[in-house]
Length: 72
Image 1 (tube, one colour):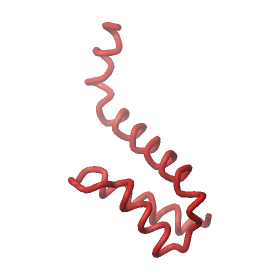
Image 2: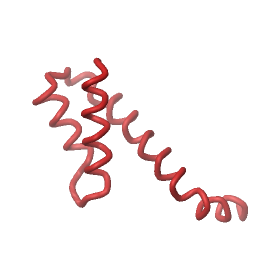
Image 3: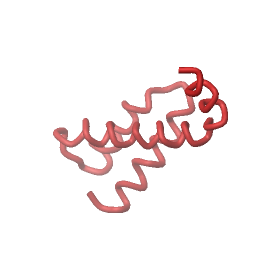
Image 4: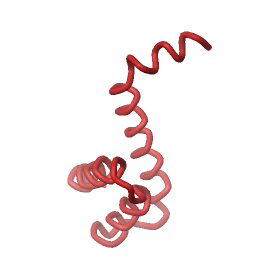
């Protein structure tokens, strides 16, 4: 996968994650329809994009998460 495709899919994931539509569906549609991707590569791409979202949200909410993890 080239850098352009990675950037496009990251933008689609980032934008659609925070609005009330399925980000997984949007990333899949863009990858298959517009970027000409292979169906066998959809699952790994979705996993990586959601790991990126998890990391970004954890970083953003780190001060709220830290006390919760301290009580476990």
